[in-house]
Length: 377
Image (cartoon, rainbow, N blue to C red; front, side, top):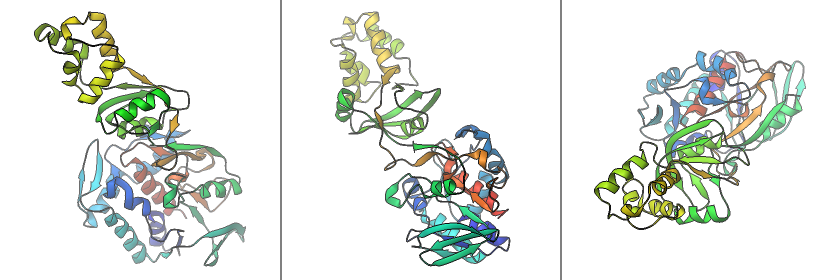
């Protein structure tokens, strides 16, 4: 939609094809229905790609501040929630309404509930065979997203187009997705389902500190979704359940002052009660604080600050917010998003091998890459 607006404002005749019955369905459900439409802290280090600097050109030329200004001019009230994440005060539908209104004013023809059966080259351009008939175009922009949230109609169609025209792909996988467990660890998670807390998660050289939630399938919450983009099969994740505290020092002080306190009750002063009970049992401790040796307290602190867990997988594309990987950036011009070997063919947004962190980064990549292509098509 954003690319279509920009191209039409330049005087291009634009047809936008969507197989969904309504435009912007992923916008509608995002951010709990309030759309986390960008982030104040956009930078290339917040994006995963075989070439993370590829995104820099588009992100610098159309910034988060440009989109914020656009939202403000549209009369949409917004607020910063946390970590630079910006949300609508009202409904995500306001963003969709802004985009559809801008498309209409620019003269974009929007065709919903329209499928595509074939795409071919013809006369220095393209012919798209759709359920609404053949469309001939000088330029073709692929903005199909990835495989995540298939119930919204997501598919790998954009990757099929890339392969058809000879563009290489970086292997795709679910990202920003809950982690799944099996066996004894899963039974522990089930017993703790519903417990949430602030935690730091580390894996594969990355670390995120945000909320974490125990579920009946494993672990979720912002910190887990973030680390899932870095996790690979066979890797353990390390969880610090008390990232602000030095538990050993705190328990040693309590031991001197309140030695008769049960060790479980002492830990419950720092962690949710059910979780404290689980950690004490996992550390093999019991009894009063006064009964604990220094090595025992060290063992308990290690269980809190360095809990190592081995996921068996993720919940997959069904719940993943984005798709990692996609069209190889080496095949695209970073300034225009045009395929280097196929004149007039553009790829933008999530279908490209550029994946942002949780918190509005992927929306900003959509706006910036769409803007960049819209200036050139």
